[in-house]
Amino acid sequence: MKTIVIIVAGGKGSRMSSDLPKQFIEIINKPIIIRTMQKFIDSFQSLDFIVVFPESYMEYGKTLIENANLHCNYTIICGGATRFQSVKNAVNNLPNTQDAIVLIHDAVRCLVSIELIKKCYHEAIQFGNAIPAIMPNSSIRYQDHDHVRPLNREKLFLIQTPQTFNIQQLKMAFNQDEQPNFTDDATVVESFGLPIHIIIGDEQNLKITTPFDLKIAELILNKNQH
Image (cartoon, rainbow, N blue to C red; front, side, top):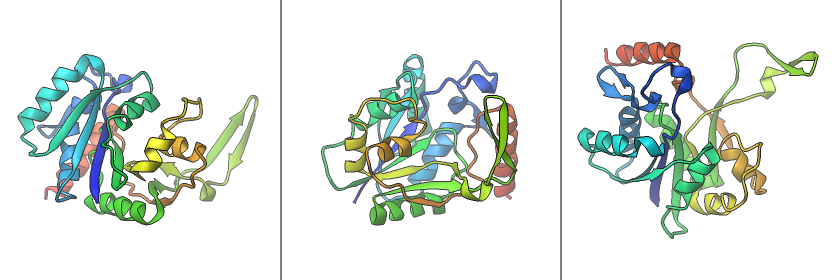
């Protein structure tokens, strides 16, 4: 079955306090996005990438990938104003086939494990999609105007990527108009009337968003190298 990986690298990383978007920042002498792409290359014998970059960083991102010598097939496209628009642009560039699995992954989750990637892939073949998630460790409260109430964390999930789908699910779901509640790819597919299959994710699959996250990622990578 054909494997396609959409790498969502369309953000500008305002919370990173860096002039360079977070996906291009180096961790231990290698850009985050290159580390992320390499994880998927190591997971499959054959795959195609669709990489979504901000319009102002299209050439920069293209040069970065070319210089990394990743030995993979890839297409670079321009992102949109929102995640939905960016992923929709990628979905519109998917091949005309009914037999493919598409993994959509945040460029800044370079700590994703090969085991989780393969689990998402195989579960999506069986169930149509697979969404990795972990349960929160801390107590959680919900604020509604002036009232703050606790929530049962045992019934809550923190959603991760790669969010993985049968290609036909994605094409049908992203053919609809954007809605305010589209916070990730799973909500788009779910709003189309398709059930979502949650699998256990990995706490190490950190989304690098802040300088603190960057330090944690460096610690984990250094530890894994020894």
